[in-house]
Amino acid sequence: MNAPEKLPPLDPSTLQSSIDLAWDRQIVPELTEYIAIPAKSPMFDAQWREHGFIDTVVRRAATWVEDQKIAGLKLEVVRLEGRTPVIFFEIPATRPGSSETVLMYGHLDKQPEFSGWRADLGPWTPKYEDGKLYGRGGADDGYAIYASIAAVRALDEQGVQRPRVVGLIETCEESGSGDLPAYIDALKPRLGEVALVVCLDSGAGSYDQLWLTTSLRGMVSGVLKVEVLEEGVHSGDASGLVPSSFRILRQVLDRLEDSKTGRLLPASLHCEIPAERIEQARETARVLGNEVWKRFPWACGADGAFTLPTTTDPAQALLNRTWRPTLSVTGAEGFPTLQNAGNVLRPYTAFKLSLRLPPLVDGNAAAVELKQLLELEAPYNARVTFHPDGRAGAWGATGWNAPTLSPWLESALQGASQAHFGAPCGYIGQGGTIPLMSLLQKGFPKAQMMVCGVLGPKSNAHGPNEFLHVPYGKRLTASVAQVIASMP
Image 1 (cartoon, rainbow, N blue to C red):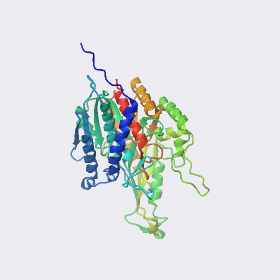
Image 2 (image 1 turned 180 degrees about the vertical axis):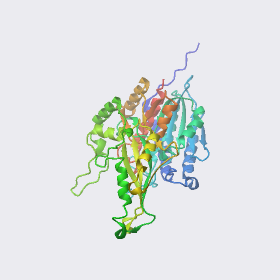
Image 3 (image 1 turned 180 degrees about the horizontal axis):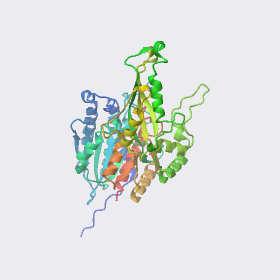
Image 4 (image 1 turned 135 degrees about the horizontal axis):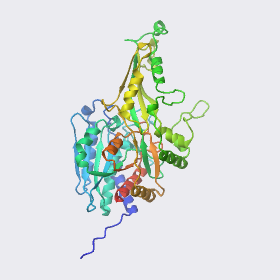
């Protein structure tokens, strides 16, 4: 009887070299082209179909994947009626007898432009400088589909056996992933037995080690509007008699938030923080120290002192941005520009609200409660409305708390971080929202989750001067490949 063929072991150095080459020769050029396309998410571009930018980035990414010529790869752009498209790909296992599946996730839609970009930069003007690729969407997270394929291809080039891999790349994530549940239902028979989810839409505490995301906040967003008049009137004639819509809006928000501390008042919007997450926050705070809060671009006052955060305790800062609810006002309507602000009492004020929820709070239930709280018994009988984003029944996105790591995954993460960063893997909660994760955890309760990403310090996703840290992206890609190869 012939001895079984001895398979080559994974060589981390060779793996990293192969992935570095793929990034330099293919991925960075592709992402440069991708950044130049304003493929804004449907919430920010109601005419996304007519503009065709989402279809353009989907077509380009799909073509690139197919051009990699990975053995057995099948790719389909799936389009359900009335919804944004998704890319779905399947790559058969190279490990004999393997029945489990790795699911790779990312998205190609983008946030809007925002203001404040450096004079030589812009959201749709890519620029590669000092290892950073500037522009909207490269890090959040257009790179994901390219990194996923590069990881698989590097393993196959080495002859390293791996399980089956499927990919799900959506184009509605920045709008709350409202289209995603329908696609998961439609594609579930083709997803297979998902044992590991690799989501590349998250962040990193630093660029010095691999970071695993342990939790994500949920979110409710929508428009709060207060109307007092049918049209603007002379402020000298009406003020003191006609109540200010802005003052009424302030009163309504006082039901939700303590403006002195920022603490949200309804008890139902809070949850108990698991002891494991508190301990991980303390350890991460020990590693990152004051960089947890110093990394933000604080404004300076007249005396040169910068604005202070809500807390300078690193552990509490981590918990504030990952496990405690917070309200932000991200937009306003009903105000003229300062240059055009005459002596007129405005007929209405509208704010765009963004409410981040703890991972264990149900997003839709929170949205329903928020609407009732804000609209009930309006001061002066004003017309107060709150319209949550999304579709009925899915007004809010529920957060996610990672399942307990299996021993194999914890060992694989530590091994990959040591091999490609020379440092242990770190654990960190993230304040952002990825609606897919709670959906997948419900659909595949036994699956392990590797949620990570390139959004490290100052990368500034959604804001001005957003960048992708390319050296970190290379090492992250290699780490993902090594973890996939380590699956038992």
